[in-house]
Length: 76
Image (cartoon, rainbow, N blue to C red; front, top):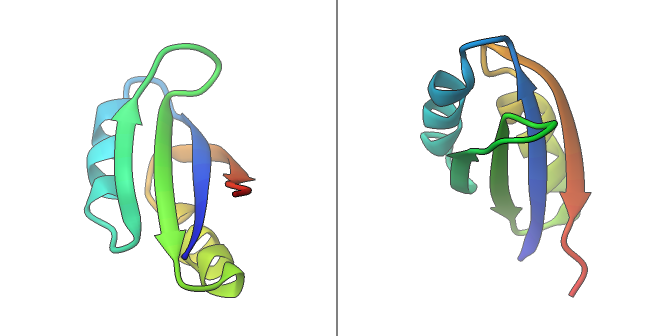
C-alpha cells in the first residue's frame, strides 16, 4: 500500500469544511485541521503510486476551498 501526507492550504475560514470533505473521500485515512503554514494535513493511501497520484489530483485537489497542496510520499 502506498501512503502519503497531503499538506493543504485553504481559503480563509474554510479549513474545518475542507477537512470534513477530505475525510469523506475513500482512500483518505485521516484529515485534520492544524496550525502553521498549512491549514489541513491529510494522510492518504492507495494500492499503487499511480492510484495514489490519481486520488490526490482528481479527488483531493478537487475539494472546494483548497488553494494549494503539497504531497509528501511516505518512504518505508
